[in-house]
Amino acid sequence: MPDITTDPAATVPPAPQGRRERKKAATRKAIADAALRLFLERGYDDVGIREIADAADVSTTTLFKHFPVKEALVFDEEDDVEAALLTAVRERPEGQSVPAALCEHALRSRLLTADGDPRFAAFLRLVNDTPALRDYHQRMWLRHTAALARVIAEESGFPADDPACTALAHFALEAPRVAQDHDDPRRAVTRAFALLEAGWSALNP
Amino acid sequence: MPDITTDPAATVPPAPQGRRERKKAATRKAIADAALRLFLERGYDDVGIREIADAADVSTTTLFKHFPVKEALVFDEEDDVEAALLTAVRERPEGQSVPAALCEHALRSRLLTADGDPRFAAFLRLVNDTPALRDYHQRMWLRHTAALARVIAEESGFPADDPACTALAHFALEAPRVAQDHDDPRRAVTRAFALLEAGWSALNP
DNA sequence: ACAATAAGTGCAACGACTCAACTTTTGAAT
DNA sequence: ATTCAAAAGTTGAGTCGTTGCACTTATTGT
Image 1 (cartoon, rainbow over the protein chains, first blue to last red):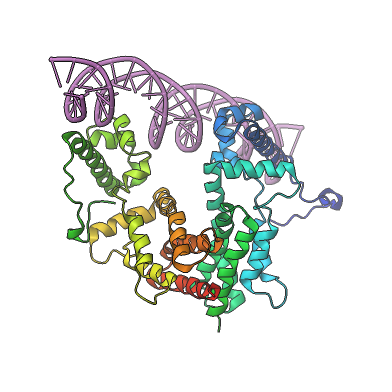
Image 2 (tube, helix red, strand yellow):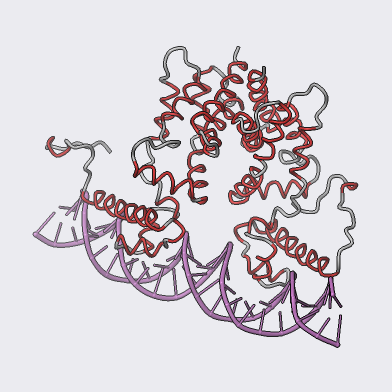
């Protein structure tokens, strides 16, 4: 449904849709904010759903209409993360290999180290110290496997359903998790990708 | 795992335990059997804990004293699976690479295809079609990462804490899961391990 | 024979999540 | 300007996995 408005000034800012959607977004944000605040204060497992709903001044049913499960409260605004991943591969510098591009992307993403920002550091600690959150995040992250595999296939000329593409995609997405258990995550990521890089180049014609 | 043993000679030696431990094992088996039967009949999500407990004629409290969570009801008798994994690497044929040994082990294990046995095929379908079970199984499977990484380090002369060893271990354990989403899982596993094989050999001096 | 130990029971509860019925708000079409 | 349908939100009861507690019963080592 294209937006054909008579008044062009009404649609200048990013996407301020009707008041309805704005209000919806507002309560959604209120819930997510309340949740994150409470989680950081007292830990994920020691905060109940009802408590969060109360803090955001909504009912628990409303809460669950915005977020499918408790874990999702923490990972709001995780759109365009897939887009970033895919373009990192597609628009990599001339001559750079696919695994190398993925490695750089992994190092660039702040999932490993929150340099500077103490608020983000606290967030990272919350996620990594809470098994439920770690697992959920990884599950969500792996949902990009198929899309990434497709892009890899395009970029490398392999058939779209070549298992090697899926494998590389999956392994690349798992790499950060593997690295997080090491004392020097950045080095670990690099080393894991060295393995993939060498293997991938050997597979190419 | 249900008591569908491939190798009849591999049955447990008759551990001469007291009547206490025998009874305990009996109720445990009764519970697991009832659970698997009901799950296969009506699907994992459509069978409740209380129902299983009733079928096995125990209280839900007793049930949870034997199995930590619902998913564990399906994966009983999963010991010595780590031992098999480790020896597959340690006692591989002369001149065979570590990834190759892991690939063979993956192909040998019946997690991919239940050739012939229809009961095991049904079991596999149950697990693969139930997200909760798939995830739980993978989580349990990944618990062997550290042990496998240590063996890999020993066998290859790398320092015990080299991230490359952890990475290879992790990727190798993930490979079957990646392959299951493909139409020809055995080929997919082989191809995934080809990637690892090539990369690993390139990392060696 | 006798405590110590462990298995098992019953019940009540908690927390996450769902469902159905209902009210209010909002965006538009008439 | 009125009316109407969809969407957002509420309420309350209920399911389901899981735990805690107090209790009984059976087995074991001494």
